[in-house]
Image (cartoon, rainbow, N blue to C red; front, top):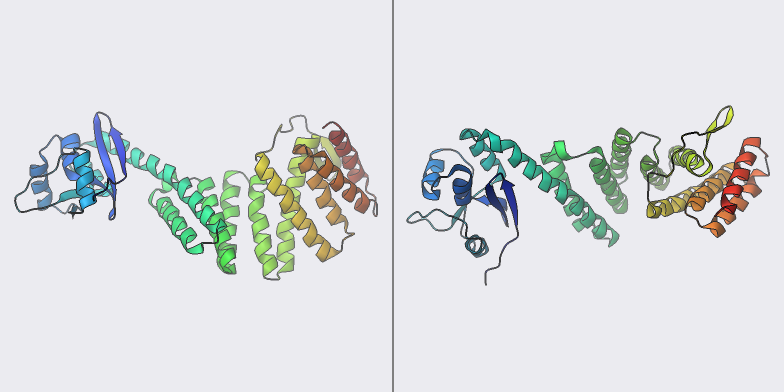
Length: 348
């Protein structure tokens, strides 16, 4: 029994086209293109196409024929020819240019771009879900689809979209044990995030963290440390501004008159940041010793994140751990920050 195929409706002024999702790709029905865009007979239009080099496909698949009939789309009626003629988007665009329907070229392109921008995040979600289920082949297939959209429609692919794509590729390659490819992808993630937000923005920090994890797995300790240090630096700066309203400078603490009221990440992301910071703290404890003041710094910034999340018990635990380590080598600026953090914690 024939099934109705999925299709997408394109509105171009008063004209309307259906793009059918066939096994050969997403294609337009030639007869509908002839009638809707050029007010011509499908049969005569096909005869004209045969004289040129327009790319087209003749389909006799039952599902395609059933879908075309169900939508009541116009088709050619040529003796001796079965099936229906389908056109890819590139052919429709070429016909608009050849037949001087220039006023429809841009709307047609924009409609295609809008569809691509809607599909891209869906492909990424599907890739992420499959990676979570440890289905690397399926994950790679969806990432390939997203990559194809990005290459086909570069004008609609933002730095954020490129960053998300690179990050997922990095996570896939790390899962597969392909370290060089993982490092390259995570580096691209950092690059695109830096282009969009800046290299020291909290949203860029995950890329540094992921780079650090890959370096750590390859026993490249110094490179991993450099990446982790950047993560801690970014979040210390961001949380001091948002939670405490101050900025750390070589000359001391400076009150921020225009400190940001909130972080550029949501609650769930900030919870993941806490886990990320504590993981870095464990790595520092192994590398520098559990009593290192650098470990105390991680406890402190994790406490600020927990204060922002309004989790007082966990925040108190992290502040106590930071205070214990900082007491070994007292520092006036650290002590002042600790006092400010305690005040903020008491207000929760």
